[in-house]
Image 1: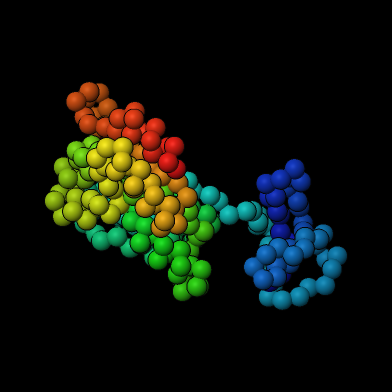
Image 2: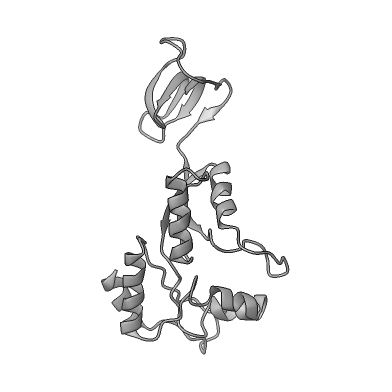
Length: 208
C-alpha cells in the first residue's frame, strides 16, 4: 500500500511531517519519503489534505458488555464492539471487566483475521465483594436477568484473601495482563456499602 502526499503525525520527536509518501509492506511502515521522491508501488491511497497518525489506545473498554442505558434492552455484541473501536481509530484496547473466555475468543478471531478488531489486552472480571458496586447497581437498574448474566462472568464477588488470590491466578492463566479491583461504592457517601478490605487489595496486588 502506498499513501501519497499525506501529513504524518509521528508522535515522536520528529513531530509533524508534511507532504510525504508512506509505503506499507506486510502491514508495517516500510518507508517514509518526501512526496514524489521515489517510485510509486502497490495500491495507492491519496493522502492529500489528510493526516496519518498512530492508532489510538483506549484503556477502559467493555467489549463483552452492552453500552446502552438500562432502558435500552439489547444483548451484548462483542464482535461488533471490537470492530467499532477500529472504525473509530482505536487500534489497541484494555478491557477492564469482561469474561476471559469471550475476550480470548475475540482476540483469537482478530489474530486469525476472521473479523477486524483491535489489539486486545484484558483484566478479566472485575473483582468486588458481594453486594458491592457494580453488582448491586446491575441488579437495581437492569434487573435480575442482567445481574445473572454478569455475576461470575464479567464481575466476580470475592470472599476473602485466598479467594481473591485465586481469582488473580485465574486471570493470569486465561492470558490476562491486568487485574481490576473494585472498591467504589454507590452512592459514594454511604459508609455501609461493602467493599474490598485493605488486606484483600494488598493480597491481590502482591499476587498479580
